Image (cartoon, rainbow, N blue to C red; front, top):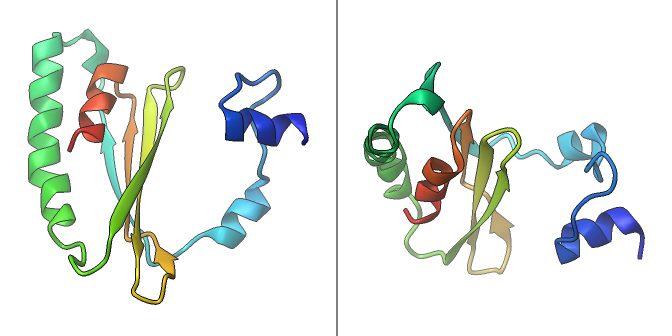
Length: 126
């Protein structure tokens, strides 16, 4: 197996640029029906106290993300995958749902940018 796919599959630290899929491949796989919920931390957020950051993110999750989660079709099983990018202070959480015919779809993506790790982690425990 090639090095790059093994890094991703087996969670082996990257030796190269970290890119495995080309932009063209990613664009081809895009689903225009998937909605993106995006949190971008305010300027200077990393200078706030831990408690202030936690309160701000918790409030945003409650006001913005929770109502979206309530719209998920309860007749379909749901799963999510989460990718942290510690160097960029960013994360991406993809919800997946499975229809009765076993086909899968992604109703929502939650992205957090310029957000310290501890506050990104809060989204994983929603």
